[in-house]
Image (cartoon, rainbow, N blue to C red; front, side, top):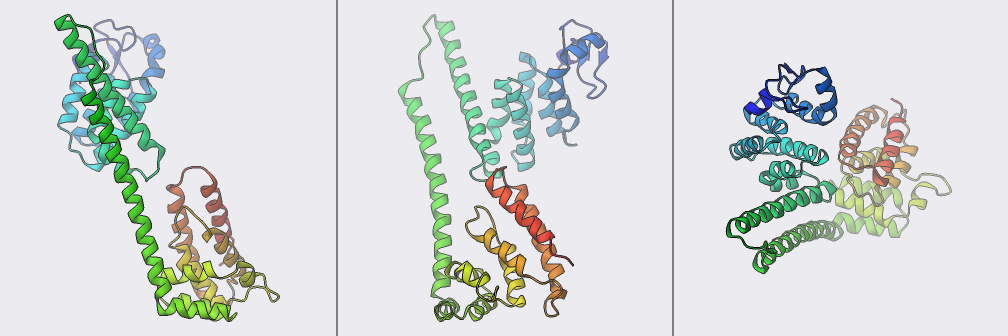
Length: 340
């Protein structure tokens, strides 16, 4: 780390400070009063340094948090230049960059995130608002560097600073348009793949049989055919084409056997993912109808229940707070309500 960070007080800037932070052992202070006065500004960087990984590259990233002077920024830039662009380092840079942004260190935030922009955006979930935050920070950093470069040329030549020329602006706009087009293309390809999968299911013999059985009112037979097909798309096709009320709230209550109910729970539950369209409502009805003490399925309910709970917990970790997360949390309570 820089000699500036070792010798100068982190609060008042006086040279030859003798005491250091007991947590990070990096930043020096004249006395306790100076340390207390600077703690709110120092704590984020302090925790980042102490929590950095065991490799030298990750600690070099964190050390940059203490170097807010020109010398420190040069050190951070050099550290980043020698840091491999792998996902682990990208994650560290992502969290450190956001910490710098919150602390008002815009230049350091951009410097931290720019080398890892592509890896970070690929690592985050599609649609995550943090992607736009990262891109905005990097874009602003590039604009600031360009403005600074132009300002230096102006000062040297005695000329007035000018706006970015049309060529550079067009290049930036073109890059943004290409990125947006690529994202839209990926979404379209995913939608086409799903539609193709559903199309194959509809054309399959099993789906045709399901359709005929539902039309004839043989709901139990249709669902037995679907869960026996070994094709999730056929099961989804059956659910989408059956009336929820007819299946679970007819004159005799639920018309499905316990075997079919447990198979539906396993196949739909372990494959469900956001956004939820009809899956949560169907699974809630299914769970209400399962009898964990039934002689035919009782021995299987425990394993199905455990696998379903594990899948729900994994899915919840990737969801932002909102309607989808609340609906899935309610379903989790229903699954846990199944007694062993």
